[in-house]
Every structure is written in C-alpha cells, then in structure tokens.
Amino acid sequence: MYFRLQLIRMTRKLRARRYLGFMAVGAVLAVCVLLNAVCFWYFDRNAHGEEPLDFGSAVWYSVISITTIGYGDYSATTPGARLSTALFIVLIGLSAFSVFFGMIVDAVNDAAGRGLKGLTNVLAKDHALIVNFPSESRVRQVIDEIRSDPEHANDEIVIVTDQIDELPFRLENVMFVRGSAHDAETYRRASAQHCRLAIVLSKSYDDPNSDAVVAAAVSVIDSIDTNIHIVAECLNEKHRELFKAVRCDAIVSGLRMAGNLLVQEVHDPGISRVMEVLTSNLEGDTLYSTLAERAGVDYTAMAGRLLDRGVNMLAVNRSDRVLTTFRGESSEPGDRVIYVAPKRMAPGELFAGS
Image (tube, rainbow, N blue to C red; front, side):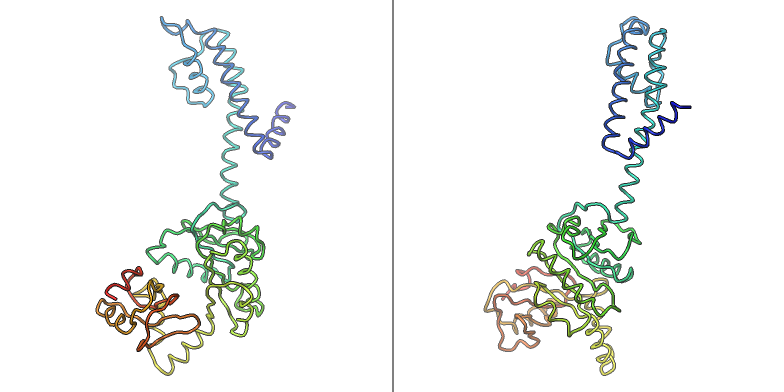
C-alpha cells in the first residue's frame, strides 16, 4: 500500500513537471528494455533453435513485450530470463509504459485545450489578424468574406481578443490568441510580425469609447511591423481624428455607410441590394481595386475597353480624391482603379491595350 501511494505521488510530480517527467520515464523504459535484453540474450540465447539468438532479437523481444503487443515469436524459457522479464517488463516496464503513454495523452489534450482557449503561441505566416470580438456572428461574417475570395480561401486567420475565454466555433485554419489588444506580447504570440493584414473591429457597438480602443490597437500593430496592411472599423465619424495620429491604411465607417444606404434606398429603391452584392465576395461580381502600373493612360478610353470585356470601371482613388467621371483624366502614379468584375485582375491585364 505504501509503495503504491509513493508511486501515485511520484506520477503526479512527473506529470506536473512535464519535460522532466518525459525524460525520467523515458529513461526508465530504456533501462528496462536494455537490461531485459541483456538478461534474455545471456540466459536464453541458445534456447530458441539451432542458431544462437542475436542481441538485436533480444532487444526486439523486450520492446514488443513492454508495449504489451507480444507477437509470440520469442518467450522466456530459462529461470533467469523469466525472472528478468517479470522484474524489468511486468513489474517496472509496464508501469513505466502506462505512465509514459498517459503523459502523452495528457500533453495532447492539454495542448488542444490551450489552443481553444488562446493560451498558446501561433505559428503562422502571411495570415490575417482579426482583432476584437464584438459578436460571434460578426466575426464569422468577416471570416466568410475573407475566405470567399478564391485567392484567400485557404488563408490562416488568427483572432486576437480578451473578450472571450474560448473560441465558440471550430473552423479549419482559424486560430485564437487570448490577450489584450493593446499588448505587443499578444501580437507576438499571434505571429503578427509575419501576418499579411490586420482587420481591427470595434470592441463593442454600444461602447462610445470603442473607437479609442481600436485606434490604440492599430498603433500597437503598426509598432510590430509597419508593412502590415491595417484596416480599422470606426463607429463615430467624429472620432476619425483619433486615427490621424496612427498609421492606418483604411478606416471603414460601418454605421455611417449603413445610414447612407438607408436614406438612398428610400429615395432610390434597389441601391442597397446592389451595394450588398458588390461589397460581398459570396454573391455575384464584386468590387476590386488595382494599383495603376503606369502613368498617362486615358481613363475614358480604358473604361470603354474594360466594358467590352465585361468589366465595369467605377472610380479611381487618387490620394484623398475619388474620381467617378474620367473625361480628361489620365493615370498617375499611386492611382488605384476600382472596378466590378467576376475576379481580381492583375495590373497588366487591367491596363492591356492602353
């Protein structure tokens, strides 16, 4: 009884100190296999056929026995070999093997649990960050939109937030890092230095301070790597000044756009449905943008050529200006062409024939 109690206590300590435990139990297994192989070879090497048993076969017998497989091709026949099998295999080896296997199962379960709870470091590259978790439906919508683009259907996505204790859904290549959106260490755990883009959502649509929280998160992400393409959600148009102090590639005022569409739909029915299709990757042709590859291209002629190919050129972003009519306008360095098409077009393809 005392020996059993001590064994249980030792097992608890080894499981608590996982790396030390693996080494200790692994060493016990190796010693048991080696000692039993030596004894089996010494006592039984001439007891299995005309040819003496080689040491490799003795090791094979020990490994198979300690893992409880027991093919039956060898068995101990002499008293010395049987005694060593009883001691090193049955008494010590099987106990150590059970403990070792249990530690592996515990480690796998613990790793899976920690991953769901966002407590592990993420190993990813060229992935997308989604910062904050206003609601499950909102985050799922953003994920679906990202993945509906064929070029990004298999992209890894990492959700960064301290608003949930565990990810409420399981999706392939969607990972979770739990931590403050204002802590640089949280983003390092999410491999932000290797990510392709970051989408910073509002923390709560009922919190008037949410825009300040988003702006602070943008600042931290930019401090990790200035090459990350950052898109932030802004609830109150009056809070846009908050984002002027940080580098943010784009600011999306969702509530303002929704209000504009509501009024537009009242005056001109059907516009909201068109915008719903154009801004979604899940249905019909959608909006794309491509950087102008060269200067001096006449936009009016270019729009006509694209229309003949089933591509509708809508606008050109030039710094803070948005050009929606192209008469007398030619491409300039830094222009971004906005168009509606079934798929994204490369600059060379978009400007072909110009």
